[in-house]
Length: 453
Ligand code: C2O
Ligand code: CU
Ligand code: CU
Image (cartoon, rainbow, N blue to C red):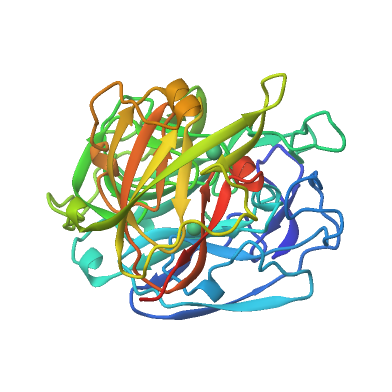
């Protein structure tokens, strides 16, 4: 973990960033399934933070050191002592060595800071990177690789005229926390509005939404269809044709875009009204040998009948008198309340995420992968007053591009979202939380225990 000055754009002065290994995103770590890996994460950050800490937040009290770090590999089936528990932070001059067994299928995981109370600031400062796991089944598919497989780590940032990161504050000096941060610039692989020269052939893009709060809806300016071949935890059963790919914070999309027949074109990737990046397609023909297989990897459905327990979990937003959101709670409970979610190792549970708020909350569980069962409208007011669910519509299955292994799920506003999880891996303490980092830092995170059989 190091502070550096890096140019985000040719026309901007260098920006102060906090990084892993001197760049944001940090180095892409490539691993193989079944091959364990030890990483020493050394905290070499400077003694002072440069973003506005809110000392009223739990875990960020003024009595704690200002600069702290701890690394979590998002999506990793890692033992609890190597998972980057938010309270396992350490200060500059210290380091921790974590073990990643990588006993899991090929997928695009990512690593990022997870420090209690200042996670949103450390991540915003630049502390994240990709962690790819590969395996034989994926290799056998002959997907675009080498120079034709490109990570796209996308985040939005508020940049000041002097090129420095701006992190907005509430206006209340004692309590600077704001409920969401949205940038004015899209940064891809550490560059604002970059372009990429591509050959007129198929490319595979490993896309990560590394934003604190912004949801992306990615499309191409020529209206071209592309394919999503994988989601958070690896390959989908079959490619899904799309004109728009939606990504909540922390979600990943494995996309194949075919530039054949577009020689000489400049194609812009947009997200809503933002330009994300540009592809400049070279003229000519290319001798591409990669394929887009019709079948990728089977994703066997976890039968609902195997669930030993169903948990109803409300996502609750507390508002101030003026209607601003103040705190968000999972299941109505703050971080420090006793553990309530305690699944047994290897057992299957259904988690029913009840979202009466007007926000979509991307909910992430550490250590496990899961499947989305369905989403269903309900009456938020009736739920908030009576605690009972009254549905107002039919349940809808996940979108085809979500119908694979996930580790983060959109709990959409005024919807009940059901996921089914097998708690495979290790016994011990993990966390589950909203991946809007401002929410996570303000109590929208809970510990959970995987209990040994
Ligand atoms: Cu992206 Cu708790 O993680
Ligand atoms: Cu995680
Ligand atoms: Cu949230």
